[in-house]
Amino acid sequence: MTLLHAHAHVHAEITFGIFAEEVLLHSLIDVLKLLPILFLTYLLMEFIEHRASDKTVRFIERSGTLAPVVGAAAGLLPQCGFSVSAANLYTGRVISVGTLIAVFLATSDEMIPIMISGNIRVTTIIYILLYKFAVAAVVGILADFVLRLFGKRREPINIDEICDEDNCHCERGIFYSALHHTLTITAFVAIVTLVLNSAVFFIGEERIGELVGNIPVLSHFVAALVGLIPNCAASVVLSTFCAKGIITSGAMLAGLFSGAGVGVLVLFRVNKNLKTNLMILGALVCVGVAFGLLADALPFLEIVRK
Image 1 (cartoon, helix red, strand yellow):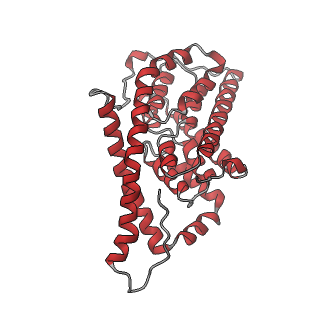
Image 2 (image 1 turned 30 degrees about the vertical axis):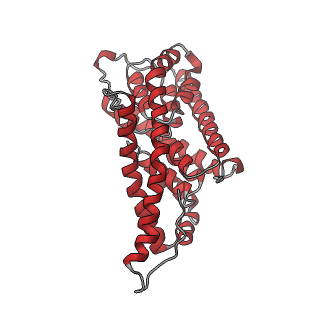
Image 3 (image 1 turned 90 degrees about the horizontal axis):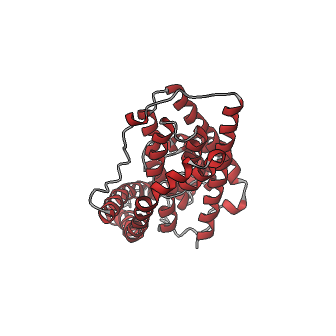
């Protein structure tokens, strides 16, 4: 996305023309550049999801102890449909809690298209994805190991009672679904971009960066809480802020680790064990903050533009 080079404009000489040129025009350019990239990206995502999701689920079911590794790999796919499936599979005792956590931790929703459209270097994106995969797989395996060590078992649940709520809008084919998702995300990105560019125009990029930079631990914790929002809004906001250099990659990752998109919402709807659901949420936040802080200490995870 285009970085808005603005300063704090607080005097009377501000006119609508200046605001329109530096905020509205920049925001419109950002969104227009995003449209073709988003559509092609989501078209590919829909193709992968509809052609490969069933095979992926069957493979996970047979993976045993290493299921969290497969779950982490599946969670990397830039869509929240698999996190929804994972919530249902966990509730039906098809996959373990470690596999569910691995999928949730690896899920990034809109990070990849936002990063690509923000001209972030491809190698940087790959490093971020590998980091998410490694953390998700290890934490998932450890979660299953601890539960087996203490002999924790869940009572059986009738999987037939679980409703399928992937909200993929696929009844008209992958092209309609990709277009629907593109327009939906673009509208949200337009709002976020306009608000962000307006804030930069009136406050200034440097001052915003200083406010966040002075409280790194708090910013990671806040980002992890934002990530819990059960839709793609959180990932759009966090990825956009990171692509614009307002928050660090570690703060972004703190929110992306804790965020699992609609999967968290579905988990609370289909799994009646509130205590377990809250423990999973707590684990996501703790992992997000801890490994978000660690990410800022790793130079290869620093955001680098093309």
